[in-house]
Image 1 (cartoon, rainbow, N blue to C red):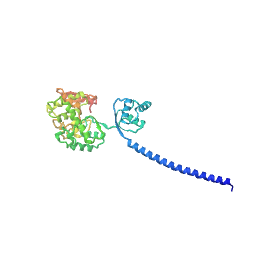
Image 2: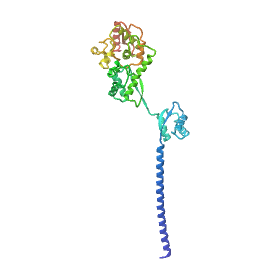
Image 3: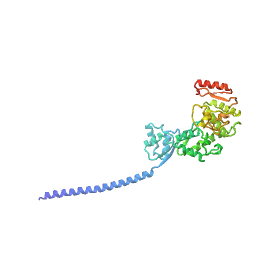
Length: 359
């Protein structure tokens, strides 16, 4: 073998050894670097997690984009108010952000943050509306359908003694009919966390608030002895009247009949006694034996027969002096006619039937 061949063979062997050494060392450094980077990323991620916070901010109504970005910057939601304001301007959203109270993370991208501010703060309250004229069981059903609380649960809450009212009939809260008319019809803003008792207390307390406001500068009329009578008459007016202008006149008819010891003969009390909603009261219905049947028993029913609004209470205070003892729905618009003559009443009734105003 020649010296040249030995030389080239040795050189090739050295080159292979050198290449393998470099590759091995490179892998060691690469693995070490990767491990080092991974550890560094772990530290960064851990720090990021520790730095994430929920920040409470309040944006007043009418705030400009500049004012909003300033609030966000001051609270630490964003790092640059100028950058965010430019972003909003470029996206044509500077006048679309909504006021309100927010809970926002401090690590959101501009797009995520803007999406939240465009939707507005999450609802912490909701509204429920109780119409006038509902019976107590219908009122509880209405509350149930709007809040999700079962009717039976609401009933138990009302009768448990947890809900309080100074107007409960005879002071006995354990009977449902003793609460009739005391859940005040209105629209209410309810906290999403409110339970059944709290909701009912809010609605019941509203009647006390309304009554206090009315009777700060007024007294009970001389022909009414107590608030139960006031509320009962108000419920009769609510059930019988469609137009506000007729309410005081209906109150005067009730007053005159009470003065004259006449039966009130109000159809709505018969329907309440029957617990049936009907468009027409039949002769057989008038035979129902109930203290609420004002065709059989004189005076007022024991309690209100429905929920009633402020306007029905005011109508009692504004009842005019009159000799009317009859009223009747005589127009499809809801207008009523009044008289003190029975013959006139019968004539009005026949005419209203012919015109299809009443059945």
